[in-house]
Amino acid sequence: MGVTKEQVESSLNAKLNPSHLEVIDTSGGCGASFVVEIVSEQFEGKRLLERHRMVNAALEEEMKQIHALSIKKAVTPEQWKKLQESNESNSAA
Image 1 (cartoon, rainbow, N blue to C red):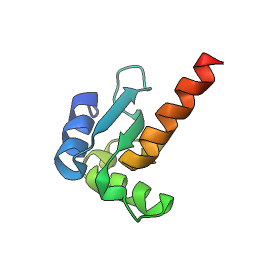
Image 2 (cartoon, one colour):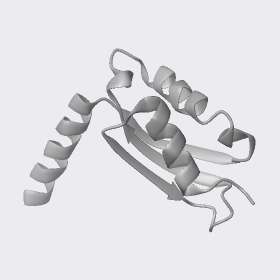
Image 3 (cartoon, rainbow, N blue to C red):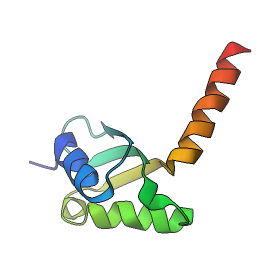
């Protein structure tokens, strides 16, 4: 059995303390492929590549069984707020 969505969420919550986290199992339930959207203050001052490395490091054990990890968003709370405001204004148009 592969990694569960809950295991990925637990590791990311424990290590990166996100204010928003969405994990989607895109493997059809076998736990081999996930899409992650994460917002964390720990990303402050870090470039995108560094943020992705932080996510991969937080999932070090899980990555031994995961074949594909797509990090859809890895942003700071400030960036997340701007994205949400932008989405709301686009929806209202």
